[in-house]
Image (cartoon, rainbow, N blue to C red):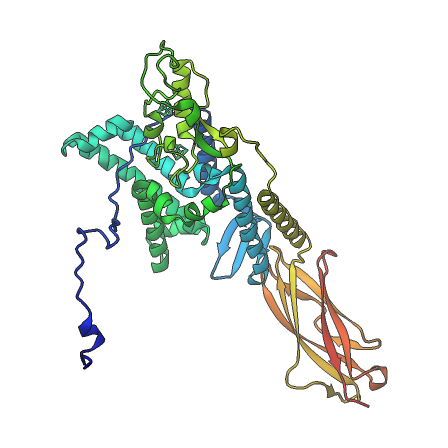
Length: 478
Ligand code: SF4
Ligand code: SF4
């Protein structure tokens, strides 16, 4: 039988994608059109708590860079100078371990709280939540609550609508600009930044970052809102693997609420074969991500508890007990034994505590001066005119405090050796100075050709500031 000599590609049966436009070959939509969420305003215990957190977070963010400490900005991440100032402390690139420690502590603390209390961070303190809440507050004041906004959206363009929209966007833009300005102010002195902007003297990078953060704030908090949480935030995707049946989540008590249905306030639900859910939809209307919590736990739920406050207000009106929607755990809702201390929770808690202790210890024991000693690379040793053996060292000294200090150098490890170095080494706040030190000793006083020696730097005005570095003293073999 003769084989066809056609190429493999030529033998393939051509396929034609018959999927409807916008759908992949698996039939899944490639793009889901957004249903705009018109979250309704609600008050209640948890919303009060949320607003306290929101205003506290905003206040801290906006005030912190304006606080002065020892004549400079208290919190400043000076990237060009490679120095981070946090109140009385100055951190240098050598302190990278501390920064890594802060990140690790934050990550494990977040894991701990997620296992324990679900998405409490997302619902109360995440910047996306905080800024979106502030933007929605402005929107509600200008355009009204849910129904008024729906009505306004449906209206054809008219003067009143244009005026409201323009005012809203102007205030949003102003809020975004102040947010961007403050953010840049954490990396460059904020007062000077303010003067530069006022005098139109901001450099290109300053303009770029200011514009970038202004635009990102406007888009994230004004337009994208819940879409950031649902589609863009990686934490939303992986947090569910940290949940277990004892994690605190916002839950609808289906056993109590179903069968849902409308009824008169005076009606007996049992007689109507109904549960406590009156199917008012208020829990759906207040949800900032537009979900129905009665469908069970969903990854879109940010744990903001707006639906709890909404449902509690309905329960109060109906004279039913509160808590049809509540913070609870799967085990508790299903009346299974609940367990607070679980291995995962204990593990994350212990790691967080160990990291915190290590961080605290490192911070307390941190010597605010850096000493780096390197031996002269051109000669291992040399013999001077008096017949003594000399070793030369180069010392890099960095003052890591926010004040000027004077230091003195001493030498140890070789009896009878003399040290030739500046008597008073002065370094301004954050300054790095380099000096040369020469150690000489008579050949008879040197016990071996390679001995371990110590160079100690001591602040003259503060006995607590002292650092010792080891090096080697080399001499010819005899
Ligand atoms: S379901 Fe409830 S807790 Fe979850 S995001 Fe919506 S309103 Fe907030
Ligand atoms: S707010 Fe409560 S009563 Fe109303 S629909 Fe939601 S769960 Fe049912």
